[in-house]
Length: 637
Image (tube, rainbow, N blue to C red; front, side, top):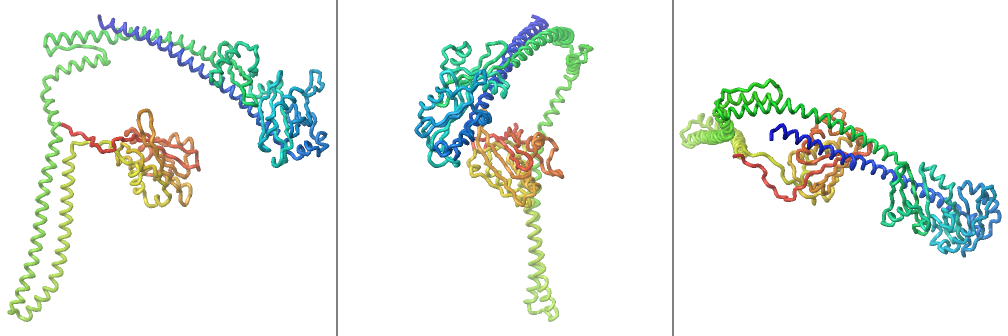
């Protein structure tokens, strides 16, 4: 099969595969993302309604507590406040409290007084529901209180009605002392209350009793989903709307109501419209690109490649290195033809190039030989310096010895004797001092020469080695970094090291690089404290071991109480040549720190609540579980 046919089949196959994949991506991912977003919004909406109901119940409970924990209410229930009803229980009061009823019971559960503002369609007052009063009296737990703050608040179901109710023990203003009875107040969950809830949440809200035997189909489905331990059930079967359902528990903690929140499917519609448009655009663009690609390959690639192939086969068969191919194209294929022609010309020079390459490969060995010769030169230098020192010592001893012998001979004239004694008194200390100075100097020179020899020996030894990461104990590196801080900075802050640092695993890093990074961060933290104007600040260093994927890392946090970093500045702090310091410091900078840590497969990031709240620098370094130093430097052959 020809190359052109193969390429055409492969490209068409890839195009069809791309269309199929894009369809799957569009349907499964993009449209699926819109569905997930729609479901997320539905869950958020029902949570919003639940939160609003909670706020209503919380406000109801607060109002009930205010009325029950009131001396006037206590006196009224005990028969000591005759004007309580006249002064407090009127329509205006309940309307202001947003209540439909208020009930008073004595400590035995007997009804003392009831008041309600229910009106019929013609505006006439309707007596309070006897079922409500009797239902409360039947539930003795309403009248059993642990203390004066033991209230019950929630949804209360009647046979044909539902109410939001709160029941409080009646006590004094301080909610202390004996309990005189129970106060219950609330409002019905009727059309006006539901309408108010819809206006506040801007959502369509419905309530359905769990014990209703005439369920609609969607509520029946929702019940089945909610009984599977799903907190929220979602129904997207209708094309125009999406509904979310959840149980509401009554005042006794029983799932008694189903809350339904319905919203339009604008998100899904937009997603469907977008994906359909995207599919057509994909198809049209793909067809155009496919045609253009096939034509381009045929005339710009396949034809020149076929010509080049035929020429190579011809040269291979004939062995004629003088044959050349001429292609006018200036693209990669044309460059390949030119390079092929040049390759033929350069075959005769192949041996010379190989020899030159061999020469460069021996440079390393030659450098080692030079170091060896250098060491051989330094060795006799040390010996010569020792000889000079010995000669100087011998010369000074011989001169002094002659003077002493002459004096001991007894034949020295008086003047000569005085001169010799004076000479000895002056020469001996002077020569001794000179000898000591020369000796010290020679010792220094000898030590330096020996040090040079050691350095060159190490250079020779490690000439063909390369450095690598090593296991390091992070607590020791931190201690060394603190010691390297300038005196004026280390005195500006108290550095608190967490005890757990010593128990962290070893990290895999380059010692010098990690030491410079930690020192730079500590210096930055101290400078931030100084810029804030504190006399003395604090730096806390802590660490933990954590797992990221399958890689265990040591997480180091360096936190200070300095000036902090603005939220916008945090995005640029690791940029090249960026600094928050004025004037700009000459330190190595966080940009460098970030780069070298990345080279060691570590990372760094910053956290700060803003200016005035300090800053935390986080460094995560791969852990080394072997904890034993393995020389990772491999000798070249």
